[in-house]
View 1 (spheres, rainbow, N blue to C red):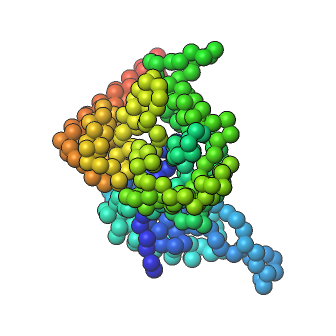
View 2 (cartoon, helix red, strand yellow):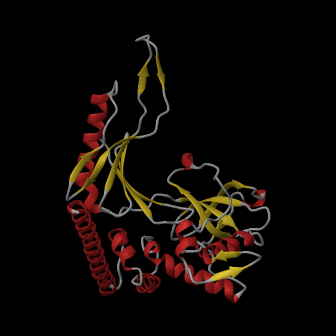
Length: 326
């Protein structure tokens, strides 16, 4: 059975990468390089009352189980199925592939088709909205707005607010900046990207015909997924701060220059727990000492959290025990 291993970015908002092991009829997915979830594509035919009459039903993928090297496979409960034995065979074949290839993660990126929100003034790439691994996977986006994400709106520069009739967060203001630059009638275009060279323009949404088929230099595509050149200093400062805040996730990208990666590693070390969570997916590390220090800090913080939790449980148990004796 052929096996393919590849990565794809999680976008709008950008929050890391999925590494995927696929056997064609089933996929195993990880977002941290350690814990894998195994899915079987439900493309089975289900019988009707007439044994010679079959119809195809559209069902979500079947969750076969969760796997990591330490715990092995933890099976998910399966609903009784006419194809139970076939499902087991596909799931076991996928499990064999995971056990063979998991340690080779991270895999090469295959999402070379990219949907970019365009600058309303010059039509150049402004912010990455979506990606796909093949042209057949290209689909209209749910929105043409760039999203900062809920976590960004809650945690990015929480002490900084902007007043515009109402109080908005730094993350919300960042979204405003980017989407306002896209214009009142935003457009987006799909590109086929040779990561180290150019982008070939394909179709798009609200796209001027002159842009279809164009070829853009790699330098016109923001490496950190959003445009970092702004006419206003306050906007530039906010975008720079956002990139620093997002750095533990940006380090999963495989096309960063070494100098750029080292700067991101330095800023990412301030978010030790995220670095510890994501570091197995980093394709390259320049300053191993900085990453190791962040992981040690994360280990200590997690240990203290467990001790605090255990102490709280002991206190609750003590109170409950004393109450039962009264």
